[in-house]
Length: 77
Image 1 (tube, one colour):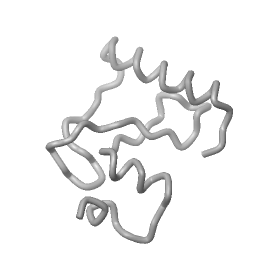
Image 2 (cartoon, one colour; image 1 turned 45 degrees about the vertical axis):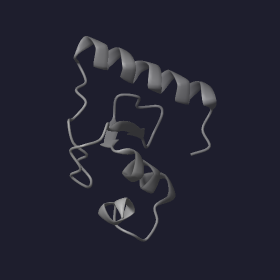
Image 3 (cartoon, one colour; image 1 turned 90 degrees about the vertical axis):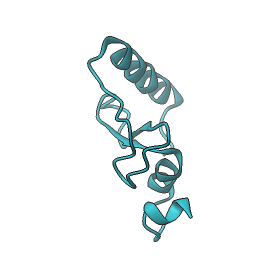
């Protein structure tokens, strides 16, 4: 995503604040591949909606960015 870096920074900051307040909850496992032994990250489709995130483990998060033809679960292999 080639958005304004300020929007990216702002969105990440708002997610961090919402997590600290408890108004946004980070799932324990990756909702895309089901891996329960990873830290999930917040993926933004639109930085103008900073709290509208898709939670994903790092491999699935990268998959969301590249939108490859393999499934998210296959990205762990």
